[in-house]
Image (cartoon, rainbow, N blue to C red; front, side, top):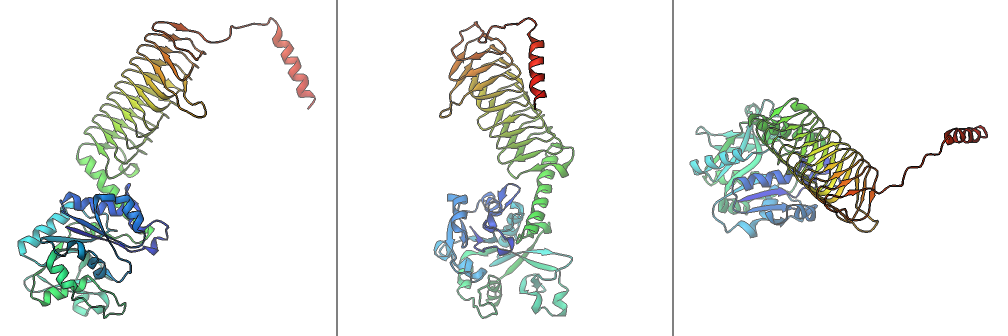
Length: 460
């Protein structure tokens, strides 16, 4: 089980957004914490909310249960709000802050393993730091068990030299946690109930309290302001990029490559500088992505090239190429070996295999058959001011340069639409469509126009 403490307002963020909803590598901090608990198969997770409760519930939905801390009376009081939901349960409970996005599944698993091996009532997550100033010190007995957490202001000379500090993440025997919470007092300067007091109560009862030391101190990092948010972002970016590179992805310049937490990339793909990969994007093997590719929530096949382009909720089939300077909007669905060239926009359109839209074109609300060619400047005219209409172009058709296809309209198999045409009616299979005014040449009239225009300019 897990209890996520997420009731604090986070005034130091100086933000209208609830603190734990600030994003690190594409996901709110509380989402990273909840995901870690999901990954270790927590049977139940309770998020303790206070300020901004509705926003947290709207984001996390039914992934978790909720407890409301109406008054902010300390960390122990926050955990106590989950009593009605969890107090009767047997087993282990992780207590963790919602603003610690860098915590890893493996660390939580290691803490649980130590807790179980030692038969502990509680196990604290600790960090050994070079400068422990300001942190609560972990005091152990001759057996190595934790006996105290001593705050900086209360340390004696010997305790100040201790470099093992309290991180603020705990593993408890669930029943012993709530039994001890009932004994916690608020006789302190802040009149608050602290979860750390549970440790002293358990030790006083003769219970075993253990400490699990972090291998990576960065995992203990909590975010309280925008500066710390940026540090967490940078740390997680480095971790994400390292994971991908160790899995067989080449990054030419990791420092200029931004990849969010849930992105998946296949082996032997090359990611070039300036690339941003967001959301649930999935990229196959042997691709070249970038430079300057901005891809969100898209599915990219294998052997794909994308450069200097923006993709949102798009699908790109194997062997296709996109860009430079293309824009694939939601609903763009490209088959295999499709070519999307410079300054091309695709929206809510399905393009079959081997389609070519090489430059300066717009294809929206359309179904395009196999081996169709769109010439330079050809567009689908899909919007009448009120409704979007469908354009259908069947396989092997050729759409000439500067053609306007006025939807709803259908172009048949193997049809040929002559450059400069505006098509308003169906073109049958194998037909040639010409829809433009006949050319008229007026002999010698160019000089008359020049004289007329020059005279007009002279009058200004």
